[in-house]
Image (cartoon, rainbow, N blue to C red):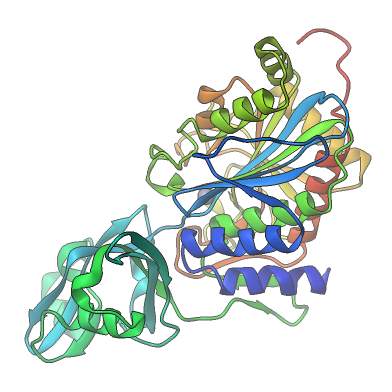
Length: 431
Ligand code: ZN
């Protein structure tokens, strides 16, 4: 187990309560590593051998390393920056029975029960009126500010079977006592050193207060908020930073809004990646035909965590293709292609893993459970890239505190470094 790597991963997880914070932390590391920031509204003058990144919406990020020579292919990895939570509505406060509660709605599919009875805060970004311009500012009070109290079982015994939770009535967090419906905006403005009327917009989400941790007598488990998908984001990012890409163009993508379908301008189902790759080729003065030739020789790894077999619910996994924690990278397959992996992309992945002694295991849903989807097939519908869906195994996906294996991050870092640094296995026939 690589404790230095895990320390870095835990630090990143601890400092990334929202997609906005995750993207900002990655940008800081790219700046430190000497990457040059590009803006979509500028003209790009890229140099061979250059290292660049471009953001969108403050929550998505594409970074790339150009070869010194004529590029041969794109080696791309994509992961997602967002996680399930509850979003605070514009009219944020409800006054009830001497409490002020926040008015929230689900973002994605959180495990509701996991959010009860634990100290919470909130985080995200706000847009401030600065007179002649608007300013975006990240917000994250690192304090115990909210709790969603559960209901004592004594008060529901007469109701028989448990009712499903209603997010509008059962999951609203308590902010404070009293009757001031403007308490939230006032507290937020005070923290920002501004007046409430200067806040013109806010994307704010609940977040837990627990620190990520490695645990167990053998220190073999890793638990944290937002492992799905920040574990893949950061492990592939570290491999990307250490890559020596030869004549391939190494591309690392972090998309937002996977948990709500990816259909935003910063999501995997947008043209963000296609726009960046096309502009990159144009800036290198490659003819349009070369873009299409490059794409045909390129590969996309979609990296998003996978369900490991659960010791208490093993019957919910496929009888055979059931990944285990700490046993390596998970290759995800599904017949109806909600995972984009096919025989060809699986063979390429397995060959890279085999050549570098990186353990690799297979995941499929039980045939009678539809399961989830991820980024691979969405990106593929925007750009015709050969794609494999992978991830690291974890338990309690979409809980506010998830559990994974502490030995697995190293496998994904090593995989991505090799993937970015070496030519793809050559194909004998035209596939
Ligand atoms: Zn995910």
